[in-house]
Length: 410
Image (tube, rainbow, N blue to C red):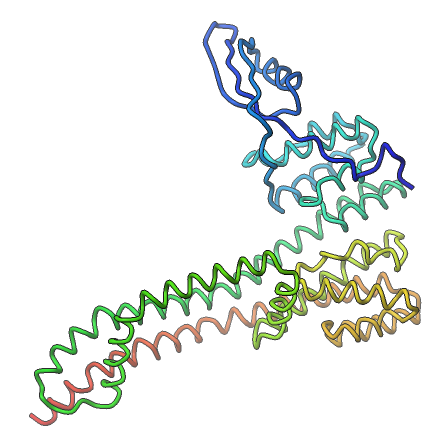
């Protein structure tokens, strides 16, 4: 039970931006801007740099801090290392926790968490006030670790899971981006040939006065269409992509439909489905192994997979569990989990080893994802050769076919 002092619903105090002018010990003048919670904190920061403040003016609220997932993972790993070294969790420790020097967002958030702990909030409650950086699963595990006295272990596991997820995302992104990039390059090369090269051949063919082969006529017609409609089509595609992005950001139902469509793609769909199932199983298994009851664990799984369709399935599974259904039956009814994930869960429910089975299933799914990524990557090279050879080679043959025929006649 959280007390009033520990409630995470209290609004986060906004940092302020200050414009300052001052002089150092040698009398040199300095000026600049900094972000601090109040004027007193701003003066303290400047005094640490041995500056004498001449003017300090408020310029309004500072923008929200921007961080990346890598920043949060780095903070988690380094805080776990400091706690494992025997240092107690205190505001001073948080304030001195090393963070990435590339962004100022994470140091601001860490400073806010340290001030909240000084004001009486627990560490998990202070993290809950930054949902963009620390999601419900992260905060739930930290809260369980605080209650069980195993915060070091929980933070280390969180860092491991986040690093593993980041590595998988990078592999999937590489496997899916490479063929798409090559396909776009092939289309760009083909369009350039149609717009700038083929018209030159057309002028030559007009002087032949003979009937052109069907492939050449098709390419010439395609070139005329590309020269006329390429710019309108590009503008239309740009407008459609902007409209789709806008709808996906504003509409939950659109995100769910898009996520479901992505899971049904011919090649990438099974890969993404297995990846989401692995993340879901690992998150639930980690919560259960930490001592969280099954009925309460689903409150922290609303964004565990990064897929809107899986997130909706998580909510429906939670409703079915409250009605008395078994977990495996609820997962099967969601129609998004692979059979190799549901079947072990059904066996584990009977044996009472659900947490360890979920973690084993997640590890197996991770290996399947790695194998499929490797297979997909190995198929990219011949696929690229076939696509480029078909497009460019077809154009070259169609353009030189009339010249070859003319040479045979002569």
